Image (cartoon, rainbow, N blue to C red; front, side):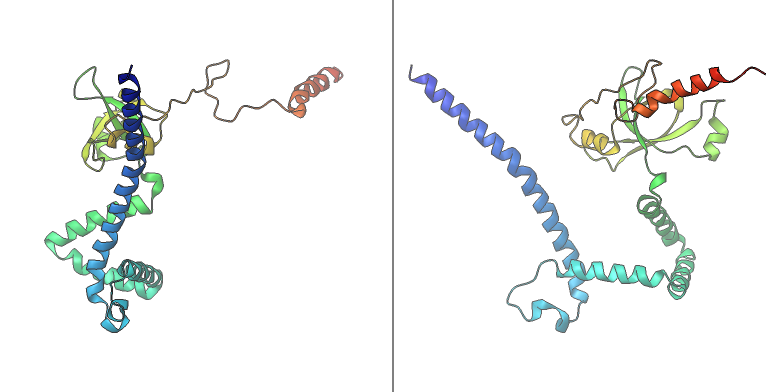
Length: 252
């Protein structure tokens, strides 16, 4: 009789601890990453700030985040200056100098193309999540499907009516690393989940799966993209008016 309440109380305490851990752990990890990022930027920027402009000189304690604020202001000013003719001329001159360096030009060109793709040309980023049979038949891997583009690979490997599409298969739990593969469009099973849901599924190693959304179809089996609503009176009356008008026309 005495063991039952004790066991129940320990179970409740364990559940309280797990609930608190689930709430506190993401907050603590997020705060740690944000604080580490602020400290990393400060360690790079603060040494180049003149002492008379730094608040650390006048205060008995260092001000966290001041280097990050200065970095954001400088990046914004550089972007503003690059938007005019003089700034573009300076940037083009610097890129020509980098283009003459054998090793640096490859690194700079690749990084610039990646940042332009991610930050500027959002339409060229991954547009859908899919499944591909890899590494063998019967085993499916999650991939991010890129937009269809005409490349030399397509000219060599495309089949009639079945083009090759670039897909990126990320690794768990780090979705920034993975494999680039070209797969026939017919071999890709497209999913309805978003790119964010797919990345969350990969980072969690399949533990955090997105909710399954039931897709509604019409009588012909076509998916209904718009929200369901009762038809308006005008929509119901429009076919009737058309039929009456057609039937009331005099035969010539």
